[in-house]
Length: 385
Image 1 (cartoon, rainbow, N blue to C red):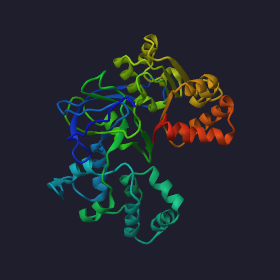
Image 2: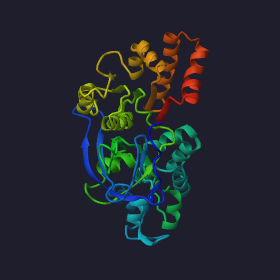
Image 3: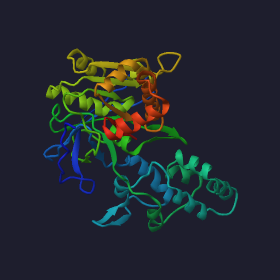
Image 4: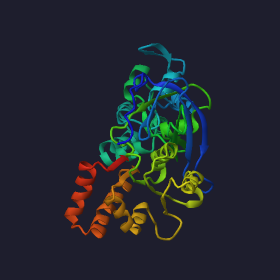
């Protein structure tokens, strides 16, 4: 591989650097069902280094409003002091910065059930808790406030704190090359938001990055999570990249890096989303890369722009003969994005292309993609989540 691994930094998960967000703007346009944003994180004087393929660890926090909604229902005051390893901290601050509040824990719901007096409400919640599937559905759309509105119960501080989970960092694939943007990390963030039980809620990390942090304040805890395997190939090797939605992030970084270094390898990008008019992320940038000859081939799949849904794997199939030729000529294949469905569908399409254009039996095609390409030659690389 062409990139040397990222050197260890003094900043890590246990000791993040307080960075600042210097830009935050919408990538999705009018009419989109999504809120996808471009976030620029300035690393200041941290000396943090990274290479394309690495991820940025972000330690998120809750919106103050989420905490302010919750405390009255618990029967706890915001200035109640909570003992922390560093000393006493006001409860409101501790909850904003330290604990997951956007999704209720099962242990909390069970504790509420124990506190309810005998009657219809206790029976109703008891039936939910007793049924594993119903219990999963119940907590999926609710936070702590939602539960306490339905089933009022109060808690002493020492009773409540063991029932909530600590915030853990979230990892985001880096969408920039340090050669193109020295001292910065760019992220492509799809903000998760939904309206349930009369209140708007956000994904804890995407909500924080997209709408919960002021610009130009040194207050965003970050660190680099070096990739073990998702490195760029040698400069003269061809790349085929499949990155629908926010899966585009590392491939923007790869292409920026190749443009900055004058790498000679060919680059073929497959991108997909819902609608071309509103969900074509980085459209102008990729057009410029095509014009400069950095982006050799660019195939698009916008699933909602026609009656029949078209996805990236359909575009791979349409280009099957050329796709197979690129692989036989030594191209590296990269995929980034949703592991549950998209990555599985793309994987099956790789096997299908090997059968149709390589003349391989189903067994031999599977062996070629999963063993030869992925493990022996290490030319099939995934960043899926």
